[in-house]
Length: 538
Image 1 (cartoon, helix red, strand yellow):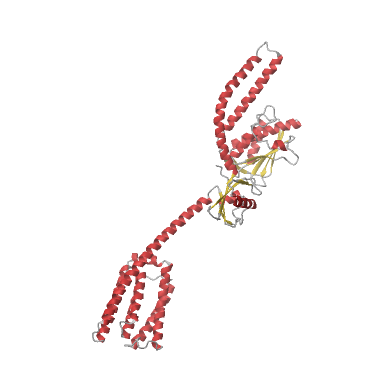
Image 2: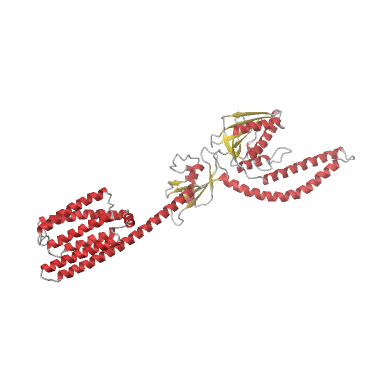
């Protein structure tokens, strides 16, 4: 009998498909062997060898052995060819007993029938544990030697049968040890292969999770530039819903890939998905350099890259302006103070007072420029929060009309009852103050009345919430519109030219967009596209 632990180990071994296939083959072999010997005996084939001593014993043994083989085959089929160690030992013992009876009934221990025991012992070395396989080999050897002794006695002491039986017994033991050793090596190799496969699958799963959670979009194409796979970030950057499978790469990217394949240029290119305000930076890399192979297409959000570059630029600007402010403010303060003293002099002429007023006015302007630059360089990191855009706009308008713009006519238009977005509300407040101040000033210059319209809705291209600031001014020409967000660009006498530049920088820091979008009537309109309420800002 075997212990439960040994049975469990053997069941693990039998779990391999190759071992189960061998068991199926052996089960069919037992049935075919019995049927073939029965056919050869009754068909007159080898009649001088098979059943020569005891024909009836040979015949009945073949019939019973064939029936047992059929019954065993059916039983194993029902159990999915996963017998226990005890069942296997009983089956192989029956095989040895049957073959021994066939050899003895044929009256020739040196006949080829005795070598059928080698097949039985070999299968025992595969399916049984070491103790049972050696026990089976010992039983087979004793049976072979016993048959040889009986044959020698029947032939009045001939020693040829004894020698052949002894040699067969030794061969049976060697066969059992050899196949058991090979089986253990196979089991060890399969166990190591299974562990390696599990490790490889684990590493593949980790790699897949890493690729799927990357912010960089990855698209893989084959030699024919056909799509192989794309990760979630690629779907997001291309503004394609994950529920809609990507069947091919967009045509502009495919054209970029064709040019890259021909020229081999490594310069990154920009791509704007259709119906989206995103700007995607596209780069390519071949998996193998020495030959044509699959190609990796990397997609990156250009706004995020520009945001990181802008943060580096502002950090450098902060260090520069800190030193410039110290060097400029001291002489600027002296100039302003001297101008004030000169203006207070009782002997100064009226023409000179105009000059001191110019000194004071421009000193204040230079000081405002320094303050704005310092404010830009000391800008804090955005602290994003989700808020209702409509409620925020209404509160913002109420704050303006209770403050210095209490005489202004500010209207609001909302296309939705509720609209959620994500941004640092303090920085949004600063941007809106700059835009509304400019809009009210240009409206008054054009119509004599401070008027403004704030419109909220969802952008058709990107699907993101927006705030439009529309004034009643004369509008901006196309030439000037291209320079709107450049620093120190202004046509106002007392302006510094940093308001719109600072507003755009604040929007970029919150992954929002600020663009000039004139209305169909030619009025000036600045649109802020805010980040989605589910978006987590970096």
